[in-house]
Amino acid sequence: MNANEVLRELEESSRPPTHGRRRREFLKFCGRMAAILGLSKAFIPKIAKAVERTARDGRPSVVWLEFQDCAGNTESFTRATAPSVAEAVLDLISLDYHEVLMAPSGSAAEERLREVLKKYSGQIIVVVEGSIPTKDGGIYCTVGGRSALQIIEEVEPHALAFVAVGTCAAFGGLPKANPNPTGAVAVEDVVKSKPVINLPGCPANPDVIMALLVHYALFGRLPALDAQRRPKFAYGKKIHDNCERRPHYDAGQFVLSFDDFGAKQGYCLYKVGCKGPVTYNVCSSWRWNMDASWPVKAGHPCLGCSERDFWDRMTPFYSHVQAAGFGVESDADDVGKVAVGLTAASVAAHALYTAVVRSAERFAERLAEKEETEEEDEE
View 1 (cartoon, rainbow, N blue to C red):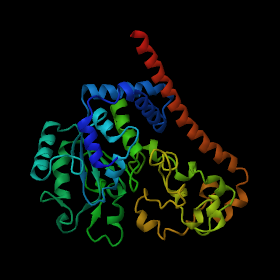
View 2 (cartoon, helix red, strand yellow; view 1 turned 120 degrees about the vertical axis):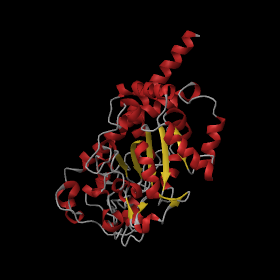
View 3 (tube, one colour; view 1 turned 45 degrees about the vertical axis):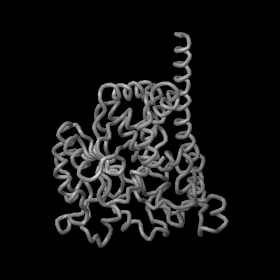
View 4 (cartoon, rainbow, N blue to C red; view 1 turned 60 degrees about the horizontal axis):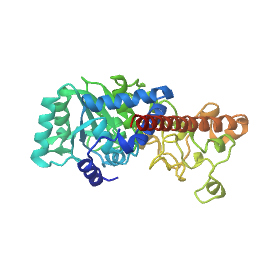
């Protein structure tokens, strides 16, 4: 779904997606959110009620700012499938300002931002996409005649919290890479008076963005964060932990070049640069494009794009990292010799995670069927 399709669906939609023919899909979404947040299936109806209550009583205002970026996170967000962006806007949030998706432009858009800041001051979730240039007064990124720095200073007093979506906003990303000609910095380097939540990734996974919103709707507070201000529910494990190629890693079976026998057999990509063992994200568990695939499944190594300073630290991208330790952290040259008992465990870990998600979705479908039966009986 592209931006034009999102706007068209918003204009044509006449009822919230939590009712009627979309109920089943909505409850399956609640099941997925329960799984990604690490909650039991008992929370599925609670999540549904929280989202419905939010839609009824007032959705949180969201202001989405774009600075030094490629709009990749907006593209990712507009391709969320459960729910779609239109459903998210209608049910979870009030997307009051977004330069790419909003209808007004130019001075009308700037006036809209001023209105939102005044009306919802202190209640606004500010999503920032892209890094913030600071060199030469920040002139390398301006919107409406104001620099990104000036816009942040204007918005910060009115914000409830900031969400740095994507690696550029969270850690500075590619613009901050050496030699950093624009003096690019992360949101956390500029915002000092309000909480900052980092959702790194190039781009960030749309399910993680949705889960953050659902957590706020369900509990009325922001989720627990790690030392790098990332939600623990999404960044608490390494990509390597649930990778479908992990058994090959444990067995010492590696791709040595992208056209060799191992590549055709789906062997581990560690020796051709995969940074999964040192990268924290949900990519291997929550895949892309309707859960169809992700880079490693498609045959390309993880570049570690959700890690701090990845462009400088993870290069050269197609050389494998040297990590001390045993098991997951072991050097790939030796792991096959010592990991005889780990393959079955890693297969079981990936299978268990997948089973949890599927179980939650099936439970949600049964809830939907029960609701449909009760409605028919009442009629």
